[in-house]
Amino acid sequence: MAAVTTDVRMRGFARRHTVENALALLDAHLHPLSTELCPLPRANGRVLADDIVSGVDVPGFDRATMDGYAVVAVSTDGATPYTPLTLTVIGESLPARPFDEAGAIAPGEAVRIMTGAPLPSGCDAVLPAEWVEGDFASSQVAAVASVSPGKNVGRIGEDITRGTTVRERGRMLRPQDLGVLSSIGVGQPRVIRQPRVRLVVTGNELLPAGSSPRGHSIADANGPMLSALAERDGGLVDFPGLVSDEPDAILQALRCDAEIVIVSGGSSVGVEDLAPTLLATHGELWVHGIAMRPSSPTGFGKLGASLVFLLPGNPVSCLCAYDFFAGRAVRALGGRPKEWPYRSMAATLSRKISSQIGRLDYARVRIVDGHVEPLAIGGASVLSSTTRADGFVVVPGDSEGFAAGSDVNVWLYA
Ligand code: AMP
Ligand code: MG
Image (tube, rainbow, N blue to C red):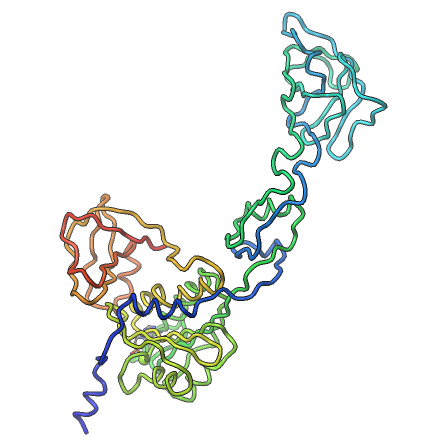
């Protein structure tokens, strides 16, 4: 009996998938969700489902880009501080309150104008206020400099011409995009739905995040970390609370209408690792056991309509497995690029990183004086290694590692 228990508790897999193979299996199930209309004030970070084509010109009228006097440019020809030219002020044009014109203005006449106000017809330039002498209220002023046609005038369609595609589908909207959409009258762009992400954080030893660890209980590190990761990737997180290591409790938590379910803990092959068996029994377990370190006890599959990810409880493994698999799904279902949202940089290794052929390694590193320094870390349970780290280096499965002095690619934690 004891021997059987030891055997069963061993964290070994008869067979492990390579990371590439696991990703290929996963990718076959990753398709963007349906679309919805989203009011602009809530559209930041959302992914456009359609190209946005402008139906209008911006601006829709010629306008002043400086405060001053709208003129016929030729009437300022030759004006200098020594040879000022008199202009007759015949009215004013303010934003949304154009010059009330009887006809086009003539050379020698000027209309006082504010930035953004419509250019009166017949004018082709704006003489800035600082190039004009005379009282702002008076009906005669003197030009002390000349302007060429088109000067200080914003032309119709100069910003956006009707018919222009201002943003393409698949684009993540940024704050300035919302401004552009608003300026062309798009108040509710069509966007890809955000995936709902249910977190199932398991472990009898866990206390809710924020509790002080006591006795043999530990505070949940993965719940807050996974919430933040899934939100970063565009997921709508639903985290109903910690789940005990009981099959019924886990199964109940797994069954939901979220597109993605992320389980933390109990993902290996020990007697308390219930999630893989539950998933295989009630749904489908496509992959279980991956040739990588950390995170080898990772799995994924499907239950009902939900994609289910089984992530190891060790916090570093949990983070790594999220980044490789679950995060990819959150991003892809929401229409974002599948790739990591991390910036990367090339730099030289100050010490070697060793790895075994046949296993991908996720090595936490620091950047010290422009060099990449691997962190000396015992194991996957040392989460603070990831907060000390600036990023990580991936050693591919077919590599024995990198020698000191070699150039490596570092992914910088966002
Ligand atoms: P498990 O994957 O459930 O076997 O857990 C592996 C290790 O990670 C154990 O030491 C657990 O106590 C620890 N662990 C599991 N879940 C969490 C969590 N949510 N936060 C912090 N540590 C955890
Ligand atoms: Mg556990």
